[in-house]
Image (cartoon, rainbow, N blue to C red; front, side, top):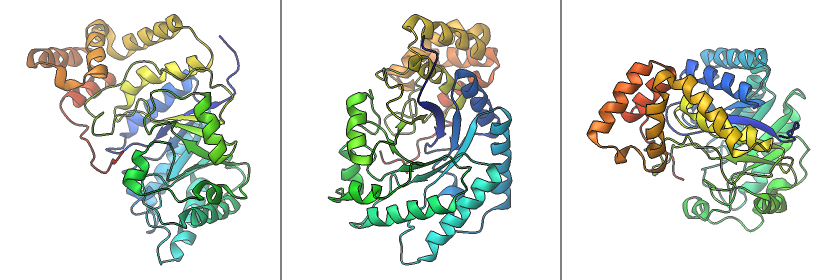
Length: 356
């Protein structure tokens, strides 16, 4: 295997639905560090402090939470970041822009963030919106402390997938030129590949992204995330596929995990190994080791059905099989097994706000 990975790998908690419980999030961050990921971005769509209620007064409990999460990441040597989704920021109320910048700076200082993400995804825009987005990016860049190493921007059109124009309107003709004009090197743009959920991401995809958005590209990888309507009945535990030979072709590669954080580790373990050029047999060995750690003696039984849940979803299980898996999960008596039990019993409901 290669020793050096030239692309920074990380996790972005960027899905719709219930944000993680604290113990799940901290466990996932620990796993990510052990696997070889170097950053964690907190940006769940359903945390109103980062989205719907971002313009109100900063909640003291939220600031305390940000400080604690930033401290935790610092203590285990993983870079912390957060992402804001400022809905309706370009309304008639011009004060919203100043409030957004002020709050982003405050959160970055409290959490000692190394990454700040500005997310314009899943928001309908007007013809001149890219100029306004560019102005906000530049103002945020000037305001944030130099300790913030990366400002990651998710454009409104973050993929070539036609579903984006179908839902959010036709892309303005000069959108990319207006968006990317006169930006500093710490600005990077997210790109999800040729689809919102891409089965593969390759050099050709990244060359197109660089043509539109410049050299500073960061992958936002929507695998193994399962928050979409078609995906919420599945658990994606297979290794990453179609992501070979990307090392050094992008600045960062951020993975959006499932709403089931601990179960996400079964796929997450594979990406750093792929970047290092590991063989399939080496990846399988690490996955099998992790399965035993997560499910104890029940791993052989549960792993048989993870395959079905990955490919077909829980609707494919008959009642007797469902009962047998539930009993096995209770015997395993682990975080992962109880997470699987919650999944089977519809704890993680589909959030209709997820439009893509």
